Image (cartoon, rainbow, N blue to C red; front, top):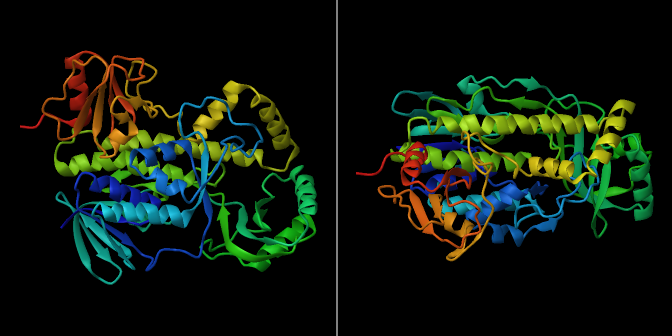
Length: 476
């Protein structure tokens, strides 16, 4: 009997498994692919909030070794605006990194913590009752678990079997994306791209050096099977149709296609079965938010589901997962819809894009949009109080080191500048740091395992009430 079975070992599933193992939850991850995908070396961007979460769990250095840092400016609808100065994070950059590297780092992290991963195992069905979930595999094997989480992508088997609606818009346009060598002269490429950009903001050839380019080109139709990768000849045909030349593309590193379907699950939880990542939301890749959104789902859900398994969760704690993360996903969907319109070729969208480009010259507008896409602008609704309440706390210098280093175990934390507060009876799930020198403009704060501020104040009884809300009753 497992505590949690996770369907899917992509970044969301692997991150969730690791978060659960921080609390010694018995986890099994089922992945239908027999081997990790290594042929598709698509480069993804880790955003500021995801980098902060990786720092909290001690993973950032491993990723920095294999990634490439670049400024966060120009990521909203690819409008070329410099990054705002003074973003409130020591990780104020994008990290471009091959997705297989992210997948491997997170899976290794999960297995090092004790998660079991079984490959070549597809979920074919499940039944849930008051005590748990019986999961049936494609080969007929049946497994028992207390909870099941579908992290199995946009075509999620778990979501479909659960009967959860997935409303939204179907894909209307396909885009081809890949990395490949290009033999045309760089000056010729730059001139042609600039000419096409006057009317087509999706099209791009971006150099990576040594003759390698990231190629993005709209496709003429919508593929019935998006899982089937395009061919190099497909790229050549679409390039010739739009640019009048295929630029001599050859020797592809990877080729893929994506659509602009936009959908959000009606529910993230039905009884003992939950959804996370692309199983709960899909959207176009504008702004590069997809992987980041899924990883952040996992960190939000992990400690709450672990609390439920370990028996100290307040009654409504697990419900806050959907209450908090579904609106965030809805906001991302709205953002990608807006960016899609700004990429459209008509005179109306081009006029709006010119206007927004002017507005993004205003620091407050640019900052708002960057904080929205990089997820550092999220504020969960924890009730009335300080503007800091419900927001993530940036990494701080403390007497005992960096704040994020103290969050590696996935526990709650009271940061107390008064040196008067206690977490009596909850030391098994909440740490206490008394540090009057902490660079925090409040007397004390309760920080959740995902780094969000759940309480601000200095009164012990008030703190105890909020500890009960988030971390249950005292032990014993």
